[in-house]
Image (cartoon, rainbow, N blue to C red; front, side):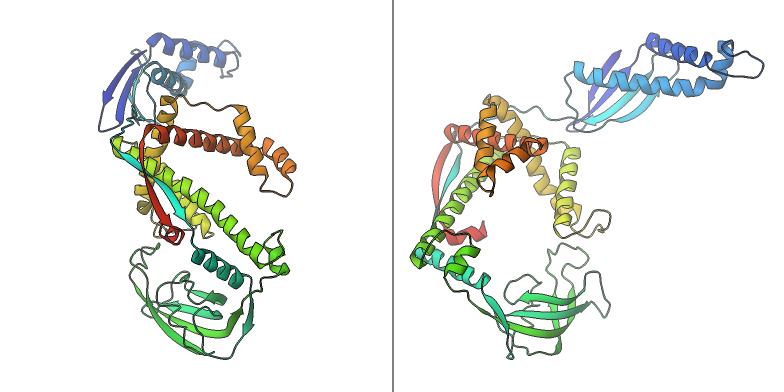
Length: 431
């Protein structure tokens, strides 16, 4: 077997492989021999059909089988012996298939880049600290009281924070469009869950039928609707106002709090917010570390891998709104809107893998077990959860990656410079 490797654009490579004539002949003769023992051809006894007759009848199909087998055998061998790391399936073309000469074919692929991580102390990352103020706790308690409150019908005009029930029908230039209508749709005014202008058009209205003029945002996830004017026919059927929940034992039970009074309630809310803050501080710091690494580690990534990641991101986005790739048109979450994030994700994944090797990070079973123990505390029956997770290899692999990442982040914190960044809890919404 002979192998030639030619560098094309960026990470593309053309691998030309020539198989030995002897390998072809051996395979071809073996297949003729196998057919000979079974072939039934008029004028010849079974097992006695001459080879030239068999070749005349079956030669073309046998040739195709042998060429395919040679490709299946030689390609992986060529990849392995030349330390090539393919990022995609090869595009194969036959260059020479004369059986009297070496069977030669070309495979065009993209390869993963060779990355030598740079850990520069000239750059720095931000170590986040989040401050919770009394007003943040007040707002959290107010939000809980609203969320666990009760709704009652009113006969006045609709106002901010009311919950309304509506039927709506949208039209563009008098024509209906996909996803333009709904019946008995519940909407809290001020939730900003609809396009700009929709909720504002309902505020101040009594139970009645009316039209609301809006415009889809320029960055709307359906390209054909982005920036387009639309008129919604609204039937406002009910208006309800919220009566906030009392801070009492009933609310404590709904929130699964083992407390007795309002002062303990405030302390428990503060505790839960602090737990959330710890998670957010770690996530924001980790993001800052990765951003610093990406600035000092520049390398090409395979287009095929970016495309694959973008497809996964789009599939996930569609799934979140109850759609599938088969049913959704190309204008619903267009694939090109995911490319930038997909490329960053691929760059991080490749860099992550090389940094694990750079720091020689390994994971022991005990560390996975400890992680599972912590996870199990979130469930009513921790032991049952631990038994269940033992039979979930995919989930266990995800846990292993989480533990690896935690250990890597600790290594990077020690290797990189940092500067503290303090932000307020109220700023988290913008992060």
